[in-house]
View 1 (cartoon, helix red, strand yellow):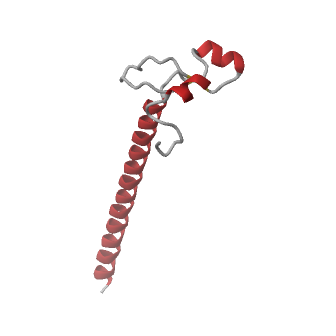
View 2 (tube, rainbow, N blue to C red):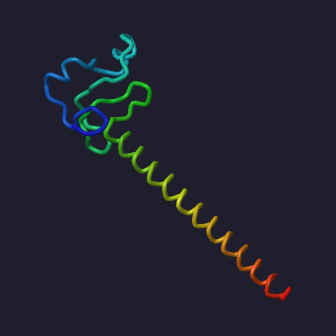
View 3 (cartoon, helix red, strand yellow):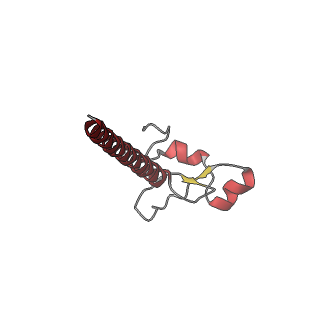
Length: 99
């Protein structure tokens, strides 16, 4: 079991409790359903009614999104550091000119 609380490969007992097909899941108000068919990436796992995406694909997309956001945050910090260095350099030059 992974951190999201579901198994990547469903056992028979778990799959028996999930509705088969999106329409049936919507009818009974479920969030997930199970078709037993692989997704476009080959995962055989639950799917979310709202998006029809398998949960492994969602987990992958989420982790990639977090990584991109983190990398963007790091780049932003680096730009801030570069700007601060430039400000300090200019201030130092002004101080030297006043002496």
